[in-house]
Image (cartoon, rainbow, N blue to C red; front, side):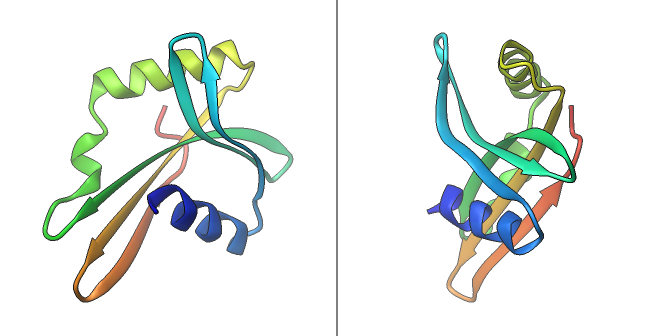
Length: 98
């Protein structure tokens, strides 16, 4: 659900989805999008209730995603956090996190 919501959110802002769930060695990239003339790796995290998906954006996670992006020849990494609660959904986009 989180990846679909993140993809729809990015498309509504002008991005095009290039690929989803791309395996790179033993890792995986959630989304690759084209936006503003560049390709971007997008890491997506979803959380329910009062949990903040941004808490999953650790330095270790950033390093792993940056390594995967580099292997794909992509230099920009964005992060999208999706929060799902009884009151609805919210999306937070952090461009160029690493």
